Image 1: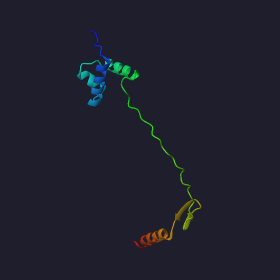
Image 2: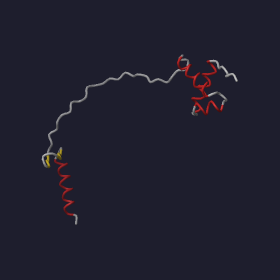
Image 3: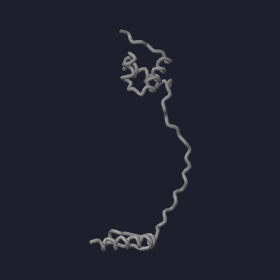
Image 4: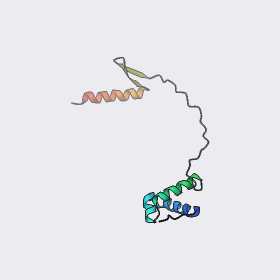
Length: 109
């Protein structure tokens, strides 16, 4: 059996139909009586000849500003455990929060 030869126009229509269907190449081609190998080969050739536009990403101009310099903030209070682990508080309010937490833990039975 001789395989049917499709024109570029017919192949583009088949390709667009397949893309719009959301089906796999195999199920789309089988449902329409098209050989899967023929479908893949012909679509590859069209893509190669760029007769079917591939979706390609596009470039956009981006302006990159200089990152802000990270300043070392002097903590309001710093507690060091065993010389390795630190807890630091940036302001008096944070330290008061820790104080309240400790009080509530001590008062629990």
